[in-house]
Image (cartoon, rainbow over all chains, first blue to last red; front, side, top):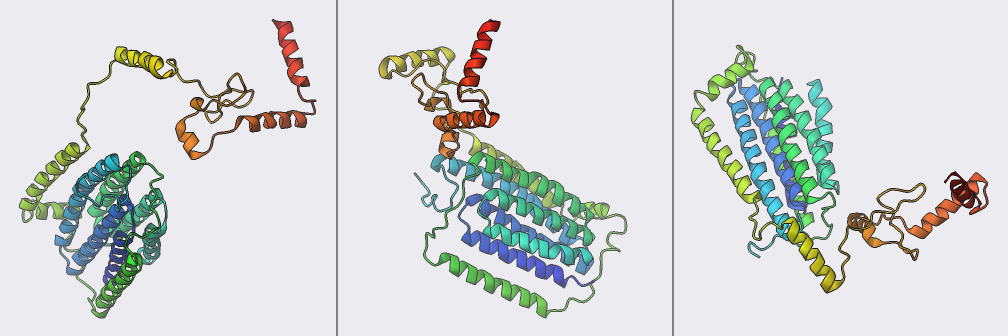
Length: 99
Length: 266
């Protein structure tokens, strides 16, 4: 079984996540697109682990998941803080770092 | 490969849906579809541990966190279609298409061959094999992860914590403030009027009627008023007459009849 289709699917998902980050305005949806990109890279890691017959790729995917969990916690807390001060979750409204 | 060819179109369509749906909640649900499909693909790729972790950590924890924040922020936080930078959306789509084209053709050009497969590596069980790698070669990364997790937890607590700048108002203080408002501005010191209760309408979106027949705005939640779902009182009166007409009674005849019957029982 060749893993090429998995890699192609992973690159398509990564591209979609990338376009989402660039086009969407809602900060939470932008964050979801970042998660989609992380998931796509995970799929590539797991597929290549199978291709090469060792488990290092799976361990890497596991670490990516841990980092993604930590990132989501902090990122959503930041979005909450921005929403509290500006009453908006749009990425365009937070154009200034202060005030 | 059956699972792959079945799930891949679903995943791509769901991922594209994240780009186009208006509401963030729908985007979160589409992301859940992508993540669960990914979990199934992990199972097909001989990664049963990651299959479980993907479902528990990603769809169970991370996505629920997204939904919690969406509930806190409000479902109506839809993004506007107006572009802040002119032509940015078009450029982004063109750049995305180029990136996708390069990645897909680049990956499509190379032939990876049949691959080794994980039957040998998973010999003593996938989880046991992963654990032996994780706690030998990657033990330092694993230890560092704990620092990362502690930092994330403390960071989230610091960011979400709000310092109380004023002392917490006591019940006596609130009562005194209410009386001061009454003296200064004439605000009604008592509780707000409850929503109107009619013969068949006791829903919260029905405003109470004041003695002069007008609807009391204070009796309906301002959220309902902002959403525009408050029933109007005159329309309700029409409604009652319409039902009476359907029952075949003359207007007001039934009402006075019931009132006199009530008086008799009293």
